[in-house]
Amino acid sequence: MKFLFFPMQAHGHVNPMLPLIQELVSRGDEVIVYVTREFEAAVRNAGASPRLLDDALAVPSTVSVLPGAGGAPSMMQMMPVLLGIMRKSLREAPRVVERARTEQADCIVYDPMSVWGRAAAAKLQLPAAIFQTSFALSHSPTIQQEMRKGMKGVPPPRALLAIGRLLLTSEVMHWRHGMPRMSLGSAFTSVEDLNIIPVPRKYQPDAESFDERFLFVGPSVLSRNDRGDFPLEQLDGKPVLLISLGTTPINQQPGFYKACFEAFRDTRWQVVMACGKGLDPATLGPAPSNILVRQRVPQLEVLERARVFLTHGGMNSTMEGLWHGVPLAVFPQFGDQPFNAARVSGLGLGATLSAQDALNPKALREAIERLDTDPSYRSRLSEFQREFREAGGHRRAADALQQYATTRRGPRQKAA
Image 1 (cartoon, rainbow, N blue to C red):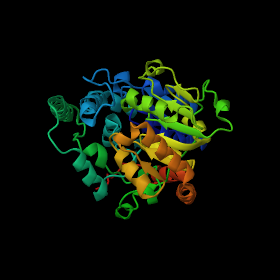
Image 2 (image 1 turned 120 degrees about the vertical axis):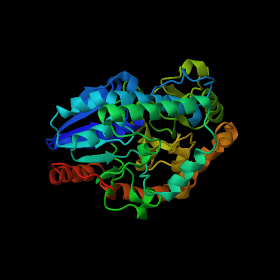
Image 3 (image 1 turned 60 degrees about the horizontal axis):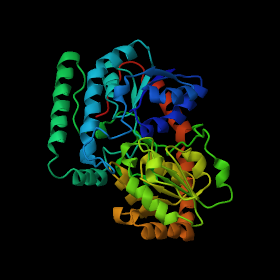
Image 4 (image 1 turned 90 degrees about the vertical axis):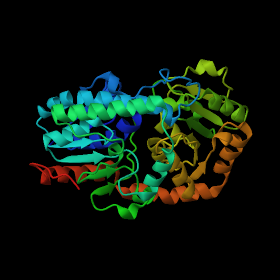
């Protein structure tokens, strides 16, 4: 069979799909993935064939376009950038759909935040499945209520202008090309007859509300072969603390990294810190001798050696940390990260850090020590790891996807 994959162009959205893509290829299926050049090598390494998109559709790695971006950008600052990408995606969607039409595929798999993927699913009338890279949202009152809380208040003028432009472009593309209309909420609540959710059912809020269309397969953690020249041997025999705020522009927080310098300078910890490619490590000043600072690190390989993971709480990082049985100190920023922080804390798998604690070296050090020395965290993590193994991961997802594509050939019927 031939599958078309349409991820959103960000590491946290492409990476979770790669094990499933690799599994399908290993079974003899042909997989085509629509990505920007940044992800071309990763797609080829998974055995699939990339189809290159305009680089303007990628989530930017820096926030220099935003005024006053001296620390982490707020959601309101990020909104015009993200909505601008969605607007570009709407304009590009007709060309992508026509290109996808020539592939003669059997099934489409799309990230609901991938505008061109959703358009291809609607226009080509092929069996279509969703790969949701975070929580399932459509039937979760808990998450929807929290999202409404986070969006209270009037957005700033730049955000309002971006919203207006997006909705206008959506209408134009609908009337000119028959593209599905876009709304601010539809990117999060779209539902197909098969929805693959890469988290364990036990981790999903309101899990009982989701019917058989939702397949909770848990994460699939496979090496990304991204070690490069990172000195993993330097970690041997030492208690390792991994610090990373992910790959999006929220990782540009020099004040936080400097607080980490002070918190762990000359301690027992071997710290591995990823500051993101948008921030030059030299701007942080000389690093303590026990802290390795890189723009990017081989996260999976470091987690295999880590005792604690200080993370922003993105779903990809959260799942990878829990998969390896590492207690999490979650310093959430925006999006699904506060939900992850609350879920991790509620399940006793780690702790949530407030901004005040994360920027206070003494409080930060005490939180990390508590996670490492309290045996109850590792005990609960050990129990929870069984949930990951039993969920089935990429193999269960591939089984379901192949069966779905086989039984749904012909005009597809969208889920209500």
